[in-house]
Image 1 (spheres, rainbow, N blue to C red):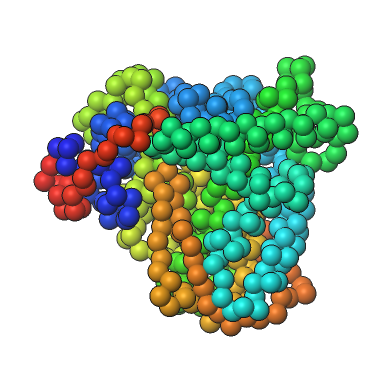
Image 2: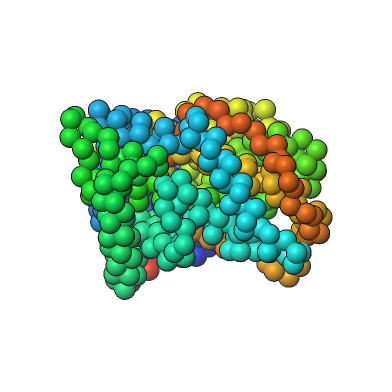
Length: 449
């Protein structure tokens, strides 16, 4: 492939990456991006290999792009006994009795936000509901005050931008670091308060748990809290918007879910496969490794193209079709370590919040669908997805005939299985002046292999 003719960083790729996935897998499964000096893998088997071979591929890139805004090391950087112990603490906060209590809180939160929106018969599901709901839900899980949620949301967004931006101007880098510093200072004060007056929340648990006989420092606790906040907030509104968009685009499948709400699990699993909100997961090659006849050198940054891997015909039949009834998805295991799709990653650093993510989106969708009768996209509103690292709808304007909020909880499938969540490592910083080369139409890929 002539590198000057194709760039994953181009506007054309950003507008519709799924148009290029097939050509990448077939003609450039190991694509080198010169502007980043990084390698992009698109085949399912190669991506799974990178994410499960922890000796050959490390999360060392997090030291550069996550640690400065996280306040310290995060779960994906840890290994051995430390990783097992700290991951276990976080996992317990998102499973079992804790998760069942969170489902009740999630539903109450959603009802509170939806009340004012329903009477209008129109809402932007992403910006009017999804984003505030995701932030408030994450704060509730951690036992944090929701009163200042907008300011907290701004700080979380700054951290997320720093971690997930492939290119970042010096000005935006400065702003993100300032927002991260404000969030760290705010959380450090709360951590010290919880040390003196612990409760039943996750922060108190982190403050009072010892590792190797020593309590975690305030810096370590803050880093884990920021880890949870970004991982819980960043993908949630995207996933909800994508789920509703796919169901609206496939009215027969929407009708199936309305008739049988237990199909929500399959619809969500297929959404995660078809359009994963986390599209890139970076790793660092620790030794020379060959993929499809191409040598990736030791020390190189390797990006796993999750969206392309999830549409690999070697892993899924007719992969470019959204089908919640597909027999090769196995919704029951799609939120566990046995998942065939790779939206939650896989291996040691598989997402620890998979169970919570499932409960969160299914709870909201089970509440929404009966309330949004005759739901449809607002005519003339347009639809656009954005993001290279994380990706989802910029907005989702819906028209509907409103129903009354129910007094009894709708059916919500009980989440099963262990949870998830790698906090993805971030790409290296590239100055804004680095202009990516022009991207040709998808057919041109085959001509420059």
